Length: 277
Image (cartoon, rainbow, N blue to C red):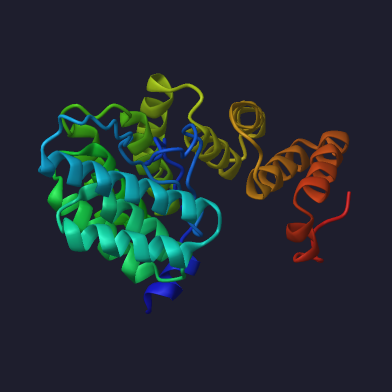
């Protein structure tokens, strides 16, 4: 089975906490890959000082160029971002954040294998950095390697100084859910929500878990919390429709269907067989 085939068959979608790289990149809000996942990276904000030694100035210049690469990626020019990241890595082949950005870029360019290699390299260079370990786990899970991914999520949670363990716990829970490991999924997702009650991916995964067990009222509660925690996605609205149908509430289901049509017309157009309400 090819990497692309495994990717299409994956049922897990990774949603991670984010701190965007770069200068002028805006506030943390999410750099999402084509598979739906958002990766973490340490914030880089160079401040220049005329007293800096040459090595420090060179490091800051690389950080600024990497920030520019993120800007290019966010503006839709992945090819330009790719060139900038290559320049940074030629200057510093051990820059962890550069490999994280390369992973984002390669994914955007339709090269999942290249993205995975970049995330793996970042994790190897920074075995105690929770963000890097989490990102590689997210790639593994999103490409069909759930068992291996769970190991990396565990490492991320245990990493000293990791500031957002809820992200890795949510990913672990969602990955375990997709792999049919319900008991582990519940444990990790509940731990994630104890640390971060508004973690969107954990809330969505719990809604899916409860829906799969036909616990429709519980599923509705998690679905409503998910919709209040972050902007809606097509998949979240589709889940909300299914939950309301399970409850027999046609009015609520119709309301979510109308939102889906209005907010994601391409999704509904691409799925002409969707049930009309």
